[in-house]
Image: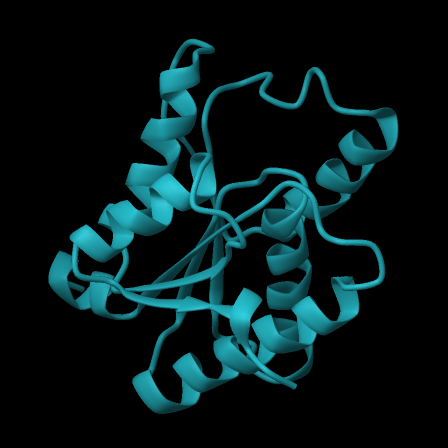
Length: 166
């Protein structure tokens, strides 16, 4: 499959590390709805996540549930910044990451060494390989906001589920 064709069938995710208390289920439902829409309406079949705690993990869980229950042919790709990026996480966060790891269809590491630039490289890699971006972004500053701006500059169809109305 040509790269352009792959990109046209690819969606990336970006979002905050913190999910508001009591909002995870609503955010997951909105994310699932957007994923289903992309699959059905746009034939999207590749989904890239960054592996961070918070929205990345939520999105991965939603994708795995959708793949298991409805769309077994979708591919979920983990793009992570560098080996050891989870070292400062809690034992519970690491445990969840380890449980999800075998479920990914593909795992990509973007940098050989730890650095703040590695996170930027990961985010750009996700965006540069996608046509669509689903985000949970509630602020105009920080890494998620930067990634959303970069995605828009690159011409991606960006869907911010933070502002969807129930």
